[in-house]
Length: 553
Image 1 (spheres, helix red, strand yellow):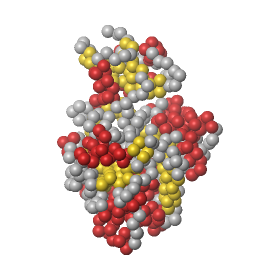
Image 2 (cartoon, rainbow, N blue to C red):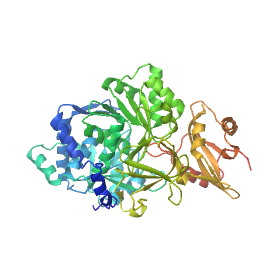
Image 3 (cartoon, rainbow, N blue to C red):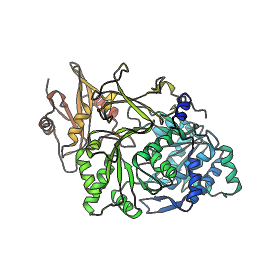
Image 4 (cartoon, rainbow, N blue to C red):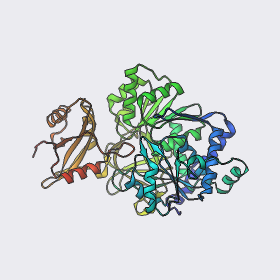
């Protein structure tokens, strides 16, 4: 496979000169751990359904990675071949990436919830040579699904099944001897820090997924800055319950612990009671997840009365954090709540600081990490003053290498500024606030509707669990706004309640959504981000969807 990571070479010299790229790979980090702390627990993997727990020291993890690398080599996998995996947060996921890195192969993580339609596109686009899947997970037969996919995927030579049987069983692949041969293979095939090491597809909030290319330098430069900002080190125990097939879990649950020589606890299915038990039993000091995880954990601690004294920080990203949740989580967990924003294309871009007041986690998405620059610009590219909303541009040491076979979509100018597709504003302290996607802007009668501001207000209503506001066409005004709402259990919410609530919050009447649709759930990406384009499609297809209208003229 030839990778068109065209965005890497132009910035290499400057990145090295500024000390931003570490010039290391995950192989170097793992070798260091084996040399320094071979018998330290590297990974504790917990399977919630079965109760199975696997603990691996750094020596054991390296040995398993080398055996898997040999098994992959026997299947014909070599440098720049793509190995896809659709795995939960199991130890095999971590070991597989480390094995691919020993070979110079590229790992393509796929979310476990994806099915035939999404997978057929991604596997074909990636030219995947091998796929690694569980036999069953959460009652679903992945082996059977891949058997049905293979005929339409000529590049896919092998499907390796964890819990399977025969020569392509993962257990067979990983059972080979680790001896002299295991030492020779990495020496021949180990990649350099600028070689592509990860191919990961965007969540698809705006349509067709794009294949994001990352090198060790782009990924590890971000993790170094992230760990430094959050004061994480070898003594930390990290809980990762967010999927490792998403960039959050991959970078900060798979790679970061190895880079730090820390310990990680992997949880494959989110259950807040189990997460609470693991934090207490394993002495977890840090975790990162989206807002629903924080809500669940804080509520569970409150309900059980079981404290989590070792937990120092919970980094929350993916959506604005309601102020009431920050206050509740701080009181229940005793941990610092850190707000952050990032993208698959570059990992975390901004975070609040541990020393910041809680109000910054409520009202901002943080300030840039070291090695990151942000700029808010108008349509012509001119910088906007503090407080003005415009296009968010990012220039970062961790900017991706480009979209696989889609270079015309790279959205990066000659100076290295990447157009995120988000709207944001920057305050006088340098902290940003995401105001929504540029495609989510609603222009009603020539006036921009402050979508994020309205959504944030509605989240404060006690009956509202989730909300998303999208546009629908109008002959006279161009666009009007529709609010999609999911209510909390046992609660009701109607147009009159929404209008009265927003008026009580002193919201301008022209900003109040003119339609309200209450439904059981909102379409979301595997990472939990609401897919507004699907809501707009729902409005278009329904013509006049069931819901309530607010006549304002």
